[in-house]
Length: 203
Ligand code: HEC
Image (cartoon, rainbow, N blue to C red):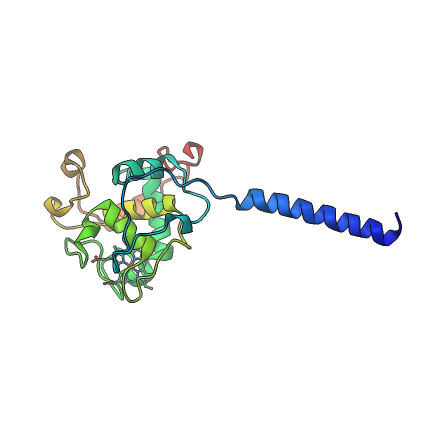
């Protein structure tokens, strides 16, 4: 081999490694099976879940949600903590720190522009695919699992009568307390490894 042949060989070997590792890194997790019919909130068009980020798809929480349409993270402290920080990064700029409303409508009361947001499937569809005006789709920003974490936090911020909290089951309704700022601070102060479905070791 002369020098340029050697260089070429090294180049192609490097290219092969790049292609193989690139393919491994980019291989997305499978989308868990679901019989739910996910629709865009504004247009009613079917949502394409294949557009979701490659990670955070095949988690126990997403698998459960895709079976039941119910967000399993709603009262899990280990999910409320990351949900709070995701909300403060991705949502509060428009909806307000406590979801009291700003550019976007309040999400902490019993009035919904789109009544489907009273249910976890509906609010998931709104976050995933967006609605109108500045409510853009979030599938490039949050994983499917992170959307469930954000929903848990939005539900936690609710402050109105419990009978309109249609997303809660009977047991959760019994334990319902309107959101307080002190509670938000308490959750922010929880350690990152708080046990539960969203603890790093549970992933
Ligand atoms: C750039 C501003 C902006 C950001 C960021 C944003 N929203 Fe919105 N959101 C809006 C606006 C404006 C509307 C009203 C859209 C409409 O009526 O169609 C809205 C509507 C909604 C609705 C429907 C409310 C109803 O009454 O039916 C939900 C739920 C919602 N947003 C949740 C979120 C969540 C959760 C996030 C973060 C992941 C988020 N939004 C990020 C601006 C924003």
